[in-house]
Image (tube, rainbow, N blue to C red):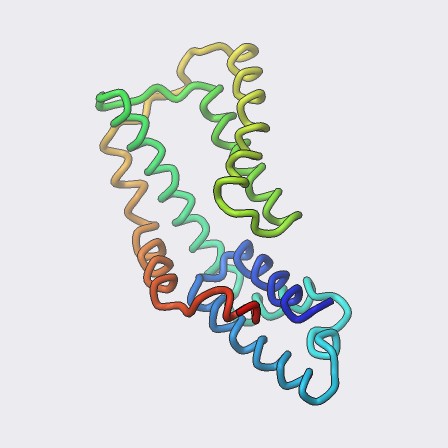
Length: 193
């Protein structure tokens, strides 16, 4: 396994464990320095991370960001995404409330799950490809759910719920945007420059 592959595997593991972008970049820089030092000393990347890269990445993630903090971050960002969905559904129909049907619930749940599972299994494909794969799975499930469960609304989501759902995730989303702006080019971190 090359150093670039080790760095890519660790990055995808850390991102899906809920480590913030600034910490992921810092950890990648540190790991990259260790891998370069090992290479200069005639050792391989496996000598640094061991035989199982995922176990190494998971242990470092647990040490860097304990589970309660990661769960809180993911819950807040999940709430942020739900708030965006409610806001978009209300604004797209110019209404102050939107009916949430079983088909919509199934669509968004399967889209999110398929995207995350695909990313965990295959690594980062980019947003467009991940969402395309997610849509290919989510649309049939939503249509089948709509046909089986009907179109009766489960509940209605008012427009005023969107800001309440957006609020907890705003600090995390802003921190991630700032970290991306202040980060060096990803290609130089991976050693591909």
